[in-house]
Structure formats: C-alpha cells, structure tokens
Length: 330
Image (tube, rainbow, N blue to C red; front, side):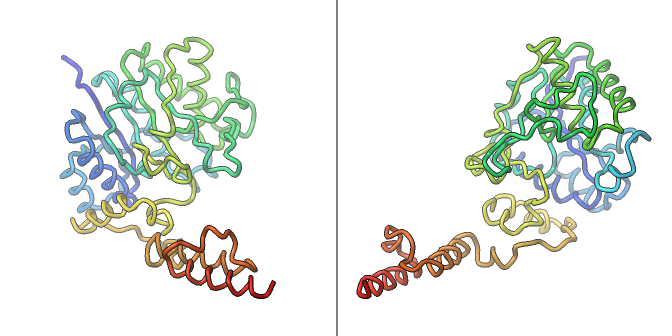
C-alpha cells in the first residue's frame, strides 16, 4: 500500500488541549493546501468537548504511547511521559513518507511547507536568543553524567521541532535504539526526550552526516526573545514563559492570542492558571512601551537621548520640557 505523504504529530495532556487547538487553527490558516494527517497523542485527562474540537480541526487522537518505567520520579514530577511521543515519528514512517513533530508551545506564523524540504533527520539548534549575550547552550545541559557517544560540548539541539523522512535507514530500528538508550542511560539524563534527540544527532554526525540536516532556527524554531521571532514560521516558547502564562508574550504574539480567543469561542477549555506580567502588559504593547519609556526618561537628569524629544507620544513632550528646563539651569 502506498504511503501517505505527511503526518504532523503533537502530544498534549488534558490541560493543554487549547495549545494544540491554537497550533491546528494556525496550520489551517497558513498551510491550507497541506496534505497532512494530524495526530495528537493524549493522556486520559483530555476533556470530551476538547477532544471533539480537536477532531473537528482535523486531528486523530491516539492514546499516549508506551510509558517506560525507566523515567525517574524527579523527571515525572515536572514533565509528562508524553514528551517521548516525538519518538513515535520513527514508527509512523512505516505509513508516511514524512513525519513532522511539533511541541504545542509553538506559534505557527507562516506556511510550514518549506520545512518539508529538510531531512531525513531534521533538527534545529536551540535559539541562543533566550540566553544573556546570545550564547549557545551546550548539549550537556540535557545530561547529569557522561553518556557514551554523547558530545556534551556540542551546540544543543532543541527537540521541539523534529522532521523525519522515510529515507532514514531502518526507522523501526532507530526507534528501538532510542528506547535502548533510554533504558541504559535515563538515570544520566536531565531531559530524556531532548537528550535522546541530541544523542541521535551525534550518532548520525559520526556515522552518516548526510542523514542529518539542521533546520534554520530563525525560521523554524525561533525563541520569542529572538530578533527574528516575529517573522519566523515557527516561534517556539520553550522555557518557563509561554504564550498563555506570560502577558508580555501575548502582547508581542497577538496572532496566537486571536487563535486562543477563537478556541474559547468554539467552547474549548481555557488555561487554568494565572498569567504573570499582567500589569506590565496592560493596555497592549504600545501602552507598555510608553510606560517603559516614561520610566526611563524619569530616571535620567536630562531625559536620556535627545533624539527621543521629537517623538509623538506624551512622554516625548514631557522629555522636551525637561530638556528645555535643564538647559536653562546650566
């Protein structure tokens, strides 16, 4: 039987159904011609209404893949075994020519079709924009003790976007290798899902570099702190601040906020937490920047840079007055 061209896979616990819904709404808008099956792996906590909405958006909902006992209690206290669902992509290559895994803390902002040109094992380095000074994280952040074949000094590969093609040799065997590594070394892994993806990248780099391709993270895995994130196809809010729990994120990614509002309007469940930075973001991004500019002006004896005096906002007018008054006193 002929293979289908593409599967896009995600994984959610029940409290994050809205995040998967936002990804699906954006995919339908930006990639309307995409010939893809959508597969969402979910645990048993997905609400019936949310499941129905995800199916209405084109998703097949499958039970969570096997949960391995070798994951540590400390890991399970902060993360879900569903993080390993990305590895199911290898098995899906029996039925699909290409599999694309996406984390659900991603804002889809453009047509994803160009990403399908990469592979057969396509990964992106972690966007250094999230770190002070723009330095790359090393892969060693994923492990707590040495692992054979793992290059801890290499640039860290982020596991939130993973592209697999059926030109990989023996994808089923690669799937088993991943779980073998987990059985053997999970005790040495801080983030098992990402550690295994990095380990596979190092394996290909040593043995068959042609199988490994690096996705440009500025396009397909841009952190929201990055200067190009607003125009990235995939903006990935890895880390603690998400589009739904940090109001500043919402200010600068209004398209995600609109999809979230659409999801709620369809009857989907909302995020149950309380966002941070609500007061900072009050009134939207322009009002926020006015407040920041005003605070900056007020903290400097002559209003900071003279070039700001000509701006049209109220703080520019106040700055002009402060400058003139200061010059009279000189």
